[in-house]
Image (cartoon, rainbow, N blue to C red):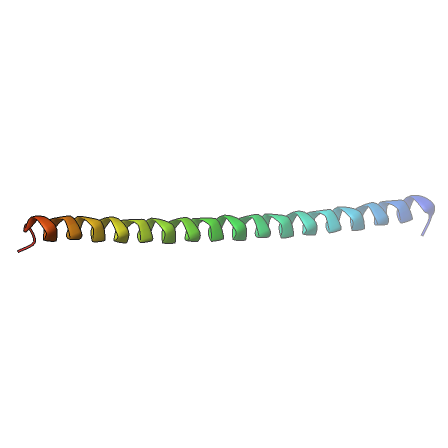
Length: 66
């Protein structure tokens, strides 16, 4: 291999490594986003359940839960 071919080969290797790193970072970002969405959904469900509990308590107090 001459110097030009060697440099071209090294550049190709670096480009492949950069593409793999980019892919890994994108995967990690997707995982993080999914985790955040799951956490938010769970928090929303908990808030909804608490609000329903409060509504039921008020209805019970006022005698509207028959």
